[in-house]
Length: 313
Ligand code: RIB
Ligand code: CA
Image 1: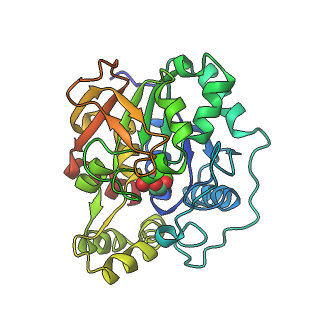
Image 2: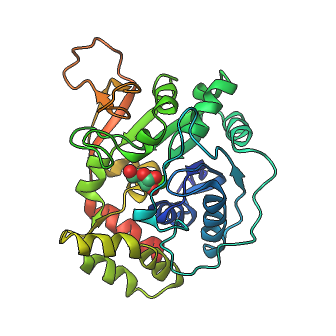
């Protein structure tokens, strides 16, 4: 049986509680070699993101450099999401999230270097506002063409946003960066909030079942969801909580998990007073724009859940 070389991967992240689960999926997958993690502010501040990423990598027994990126969007003020991820970004459960050191190379340089070194093969997974990625596109005209695949957790393929009626957090935090990325020529696969709500919503029973695996990773990945779970219970949401980033990661690790997707033109609204951060998807082709992203609408939920269970076992 031919052994396929592990796919070289860079994960751009604002480690928060769902990013951490996505990192575990990648670090525990023998088919992937995470060559670098790049940190960007989003769910929480950049210093927290760096410590959270290093802690998660250490918990997986892995050694992967974490590179510090942008502490704020290109033009706008940073908006974080403590109401979802807690003040520390990992559920405020008292984890020892201090004293770990990032790599000396800045994130944008690390992104450009990795894309050059693994030209045509690099799988770039973005789980955060696209500030670092936009800066890499601007700094190196070859960056977009060096990347093999770019899987973005962000936007909405159809349906409402999660921070405004039309915008999803990763795009909404830095719409200018997202516009640069979606116009860059990167080979984009977009896994939007709608796809994640449909196939990455975990019920209370499913979370409890994962926790009952009782490994350190299972306890970690479930316990850090504390703030989200409390918030869902308080709001009477009985369906459970959406944990989006692992679904984008799963699609990156195994594209056969995609159940429904179309190549479509996607533009980013950067000026609307009501619509800033919207991913404007041209479903009917009325703009005449060239399709620039594979927009994922549905995934194989059963196989996704099985992938998560295997990673945490
Ligand atoms: O809208 C959900 C996305 O925004 C996820 O990546 C979450 O971690 C936050 O970054
Ligand atoms: Ca994220």
